[in-house]
Image (cartoon, rainbow, N blue to C red; front, side, top):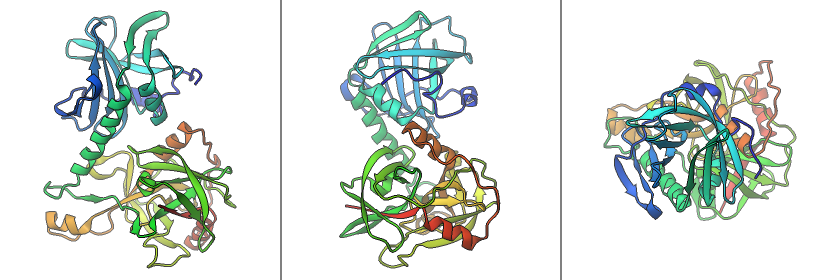
Length: 392
């Protein structure tokens, strides 16, 4: 792996560097893999940390919004200016060299560097490295062994999954989200996906393909074609398949969702019960954040069912505004609130999806459509790039 251009590690804009520094602490221990400490921070994310003899501590994991975090701290780094941007160079054993923009910050008596919104592939490669040399220009800051980091990252991801699941506990006085698991049948499971490249790449949800060994995709009423899983992002619930099947059209992405905007979902819910030609539903963007102000998600009134997961959320021009991901469990929520909550569903924002594609070398269609279309035309267009995803 060659050197990555400055700032290319980050999937967020430079503006993200000015956001508040995540609370780097482990307040509830989850595991201790290979000398690392993994657990939950009171701020709401799971982290892994390990300290070295030179006083450096490495932090890797997630903040309260689910964004990835990588940080280095040391009490002897007194020259670091909190809030200042630094270009760190990281040379590793076995995984290549990287450089990217980090932000200086202070944690108790220590100072350090932190980056947020790191690409999933970078974190995986970083954890697989045998060691890392961290420097600013010609000044070496630390030379660290990363022994056990792969196991630590795996435990952190599992901790984060359990943390997210715990937030849906009906004993908590909050709405309960039901991530619509794929339709479970004896033949396997199913969901929805859509083409994002001319080379046969199909995006869907991670939970649609998780735990499956074989994959197939098909257009509405068409023959099933084998596909392979080429990338996944469990934290953001996205996955990428590749197939020899080609779409006759590809959608562009829009990155400017607005409350009240009309949005549409096309997919293959409740396989075996509903039409095999696909289902099209209409609604609106009702909030630009999900449960607990999760900024990765849009809240929508567009009706979705089990099996819609991974399908495109389209705007009035036919551009992808998001990826359908979950719906509110109205039965459980009714037990908590005493009311039957209606039309509360969620989609992963297109910016998150675009970052995932970029991190995996996929360049989506760049030219957004700007002519408003009637719903029937949007539905017909969606059939050209949306597919049923089945797996076993």
